[in-house]
Image (cartoon, rainbow, N blue to C red; front, side, top):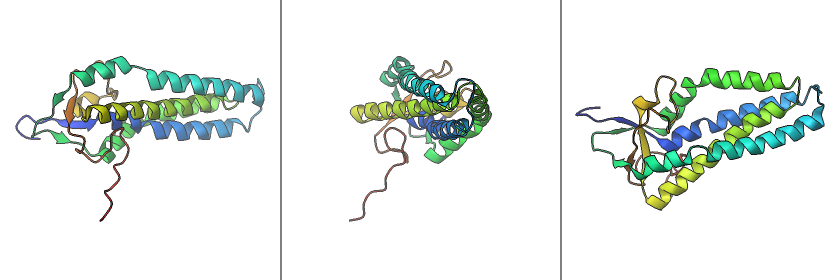
Length: 194
């Protein structure tokens, strides 16, 4: 970065980075949890897990939307010296920075199977589904505004990997074609050859 440029990471990519690990660790924990009868029995565990899945999906998917919307409304254009971080780098950095939290969440979900089989895993999977919903919501907003949202990379460091956290003071925006991720943070499909 030269001449005052900032490293920028896509907001939707940061949100989406945790979705797949939480989903798959949750599915794995729920599957393993079903192998034990638990104190409540499998049926109650699965019913409780289904309720927790729905609650977690809704809570995570709708959480902090006002903050995201306020930061998006006040976003300034990225400068020509700003460096746009690749999608793969953003995902890798998020997952490295949160690997111990992911491991602890997985172990807690496994441990909860002693009491309620599958419930902890389904809760974890619900958090992952909620992050996918939130990234899709961000993608629809980016499409409507025809502007991709970016956050400074240095505001995501030191365990503060939340793109709408207190340390984030503003977003930057670029045109819809910037970067290597589509609106919502998914991989951008390469254009069809004609």
